[in-house]
Length: 367
Ligand code: NAD
Image (cartoon, rainbow, N blue to C red):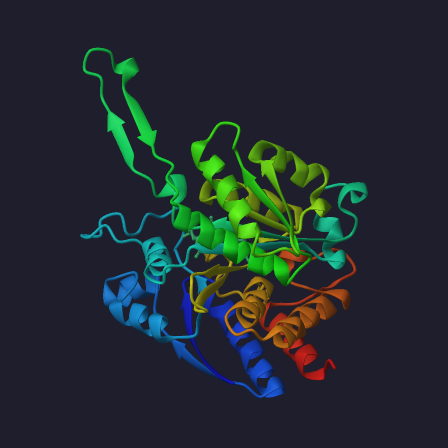
C-alpha cells in the first residue's frame, strides 16, 4: 500500500524527534511492504523566519493532499516573546491552530498509557493503579466554550457590574460526529465508553446526553454510561482503571487529558491524534518544542514514534503495523533503555538517536 505523509518537523526538538519517527516509518514500510512517500514542509518559527508566515499556503495545500500529517512541535523559548512585534500578529503557535482548523480536525485522541516498566514514575499508589493503565480520552476540538462567542460589557456607572461572557455552543451535528468517532474507537478497544458532562447544570450537556442515546443505538456491543465531570476528575485518581474510552467536550477534555497524562509519568511518552470526518489525520507528541534541550540529542522520541503507531491505526487501518511499533517500544523499555526524562538508577541511559535506533531494531527483529 502506498501512503503520502507530510512531515512538519517545526521547531526546537521537533526535527530530532521527527527524524527518529521517519526511521520507524521506513522500517515499517520495509517490513510490511508499504511505500511511505515522505514530503517535508514548514510550520512554526522556522516558517516565520523563512516565509514570514507560521503556516505557508504551500504547507496547507500539501497537507490537504496527503494521507496523514506528522508534526514535531512548534514554538520558541517561552521566556522570549520573539514575535511580539510581527506586523500581522503572527506567532509560531498560530500555525498549529490554523492547520487543525484547515483540516477540520474536530476530534483529539489522547491515550494515557502507563507502561509497567515506568510504573515508578506514576504519582498514584500501586494499590490504585497497579502496574499499568490504558485510557483513551476523545476530546471535541473545534467547538464548545473555546470557540463560542466572547464578549465584554462595561458598566459606566459601577465598574463592579462590568462583566465578561464566554458562550458554550454545541450543535447536534458537532456532538454526533465526535460521539461517533469515540464509539468507533471503543469498538477497537474494550467496548466501554464513559461520556463526561455536567448535565445537572448545563443545557449543552443535556443535549450531549440525548445525542449519546441516539448514537449508542448504532453500537449495541458497547457498554456506555454518563459521568459528571467533577466526579470524573475524582475517579481518575481513585479508580483510573475503570475507564476504557472517555468522550467529552473541548474544555472538559482539555483538563481531564492533562490530569490523566500525569498518571503516566513523562510528557515525552504521550502521543496524540487529531481526526476529522475523513481518514486524514494530524499526529503529534503531546509535548512542545522543548527549546531548553534542543540540539542535545537527549529528547525522548517515544511520544512521536507512538504517534506514528496511531497514524497506522487510525489513518491507514494498519493494525499489525501499529502493534509492531508499540511492541518494539515496550521491548526497549523492558530491556532498560531510558532517555534522560524517564531515567532511573540501574537503567541504560540513551540519547534520542540511540532510542530511535533501538526501537527500529526491535521492529526489524520482532516476529
Ligand atoms: P514543552 O513541552 O516544550 O517542555 C516542558 C518541559 O518538558 C521542558 O523541561 C522540556 O525539556 C521537557 N520535554 C518536553 N518534551 C520532551 C521530550 N520529548 N523529552 C524530554 N523532555 C521533554 O513546554 P514549554 O517549555 O512550556 O514550551 C516550549 C515551547 O513549545 C513554547 O514555545 C510553547 O508554546 C511550545 N508548545 C508547542 C506545543 C505543540 O507544538 N503542540 C505544545 C506545547 C507547547
